[in-house]
Length: 354
Image 1 (cartoon, rainbow, N blue to C red):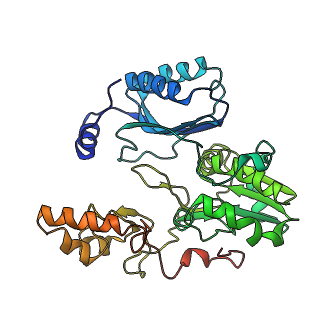
Image 2 (image 1 turned 45 degrees about the vertical axis):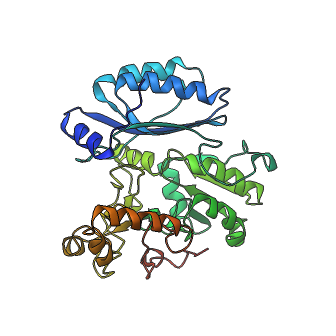
Image 3 (image 1 turned 30 degrees about the vertical axis):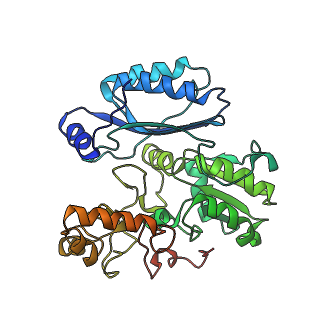
């Protein structure tokens, strides 16, 4: 399959206008893959023929995929997956809501050392000694149990817009950072019943084994993550204990799980908002929460500075972009705005900041 090297805007416009109905889903599996590069080539050919788009990571330890597939080709996609012994039993996590935004516009398959960047030395502990799974009903019971503790294994910008009632939401920027800090920060909970959760379950697989290695005695994790929890709640008529949105790593940037809006606009910090935007000024492209009032006032930019820079001649914009890139490790290290109030940590005394 020939890779699509066209500009992103052109690909996006074409997919938005093609009228093809797509299924957005994710899946992962820790499984031995002898030749990741060969698999990468095969997936490009097979999934490219089906018109699939997405972001997929392949490593010797397994596969991690977030993607979409035309509904008309779903049966062919599923048949191919079942024909591969290493992938035959993979459960799919179907998107909770599709909305009007197509999740992906390009098929990207990368070979990595790990399918999730966790910063751990897998030879230093038993990565197969993971915690048992929790169903949605069991997760609700943990949330109501005063002797249990629920820990969000996602990043702060994810839990800011949505989290389970009473969950501990560490103030971290990356999963790697959370794994490095959480065993010591939450050591007081070592003897409690611990429930972990994340978006689709993959981060909790490794995290549960890591916490058990660090002396946490009773660790379990939510099977299928928040995505599968939402499906179980609707199918079984359970009480929904997830508040707000589930952040997702595609063009949609979020799925509505709970009716509440629990976060605030990063620009004014006065009005509630859980809608993420990227700054329209390309060299910035920072991710932030913006209310309708601020987005209209600033015309889609994260600041008046970016608004002004966007009107510079193209040559000067490119010069500024190069300078900004050279300063990436200092002034512009983070690619997300943060709320100074950290209001997303204030709804329960159980929350901690690592």
